[in-house]
Length: 440
Image 1 (cartoon, rainbow, N blue to C red):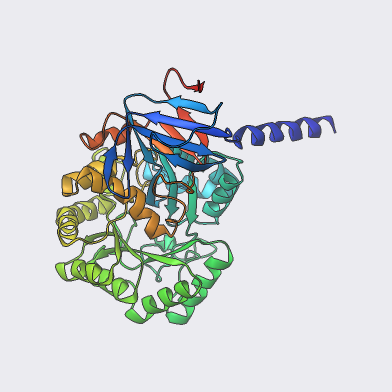
Image 2 (cartoon, rainbow, N blue to C red):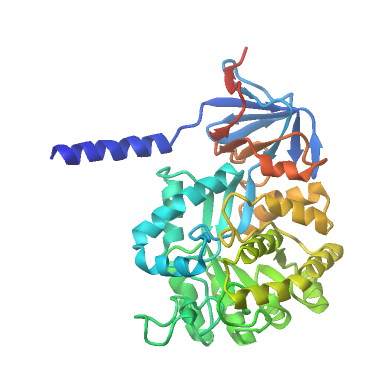
């Protein structure tokens, strides 16, 4: 009984410490503020926060007497960054074979606990909202709920649960093993035919999916399937999108190849993820239908690092090289046509916490720094359906605020040096020496 009481007290203490309460009124000050709606920096930067929401912006915003002031100096305040393509339930280790074995030997609770430092690293890098595109055993749903309850620290999560795949497709994780070895030869999201796919959509929604992910083509990291090969018929993709939209869930389509991507776009998916081998017709079709493009440009640099270190299977390395030759052309073409671009990294195929490196890739491909910052704020907020409460620093919206040193409009790489993170009014990171002080 004594041990039970002590254990209960410890859990209460841990949960209480994690679920920190925001101060009643806080004033954040910095030299600059990024106006995400206008895509420009304004000076000085002032944000007034009360009860987890923004209540004032700019030097003329009323500040109640006794408010807590955080002066961040020569820095820029920005809305909390958003990443529309993460995999918070995985991260590559030094040996892909060991990763495979560990996934079988570790229990589901242990695999869930493995996600906690990855979620924390993502938040501390300034990403206060993410879309997790695919996870087994509903680990992403559990992590989402635990973060929302304040039990653990991490970004706000929109979870996809199991990705939908055709038999033997990119998201059929039974591909790596001989037939009969596993109790189930296919992943939970595997289905063939329109009606079976509708059932999978309904099942995902039943168990907590905020978004539906469908693997429309082969991939790079799976151990089979040509990235350029389509993996669903038009009728199958039509059924997925129709069913998901009926349940008010958006659809994200993993698609490298041209034909599979065009089928997904015609079906009405909300976003194309990667799109590395799309042809000009596919890019133009995205523009015509208003489909969002999530290019995950930095993922290919992160994966190449693993390849150069000998940490990937030879077949995966060969596919990576083939895709990389086309990838940059597609992104530049999308930018030149004005395709709507949202920010996504595929974090999880490389180490979590490096998400902001995507900004540099977007700028090098042709976006201005302001446009690149908008991809991770207003653009992704619109794609995720949360623009009514996130994406800009405006009165009434949730107080997700990050700060970077200097001016990101002059050097976008400072986004990789986030030193202040607030999520819904709670300060999770503040590296400044002075910290908060009482207002005069």
